Image (cartoon, rainbow, N blue to C red):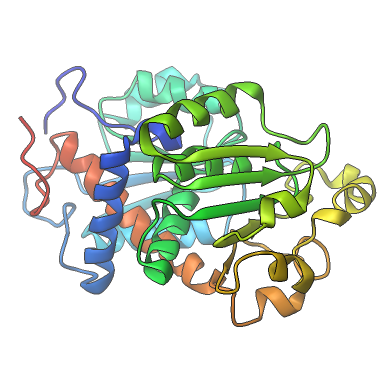
Length: 329
């Protein structure tokens, strides 16, 4: 295993992949979805570690199932550590945990809170660290979303994508960053006080200049929706926000994705939702269960996109060789 300093590729936020690298991961995902067991960098050949630590500080359905299944499909063994089963950050520092895990596993996948914890883990690990969700970003979800759009639209660059609702959360941040990395025109709409931070918007705008994408942040849902090729949203009440539920139900009502909202988008627009979804709130049942919804393909694609990502970071970290990817110097 190559553990030389500076060779390890981590995936902590969407822009950790350049536009060309993002495209390479998505192309690999398409190939691996068509032939699920054709790429197995963790298969037992005696040359590298086979176990991947999959750590959860927060409960999960899709993230847990997709990563555990994906690691197995790649020929490895997922070591799933559930909430409360590890001492990271309270009895033992993130830095010390990283130095222990790097000696035992091929990669570290972590679903946590503060993004800084992932940064600290990566800074002290000689194996890849993957962000399976944090308070600021959800980059693995966006790889699945982009894969789904690519399947249904044939391309990504030049498409317009509208996100409605709580635009100050991790999903809105990742839609901005991953979307413009793919050359898309990303429009984010939410009420005042619930919009992306200026830092995230500035980073997205910088990337958009290089890729031909664009960024629109607005309080007007119709402006975001107008002619959009992709429409997406997220729950209005995320974990830890339960006390704000009544206020949020009122605050975000005008940003609900219903039939009228979809009629403002392009006639062939597709609808995405990272799930879990609450019908009658952020999305109408007739939308998420209707013909424009691709949410079940999107959910399945968590598996394929994450398998491709893991294979990609292992390859470029010098821990495996994936045929079809350029040789690592």
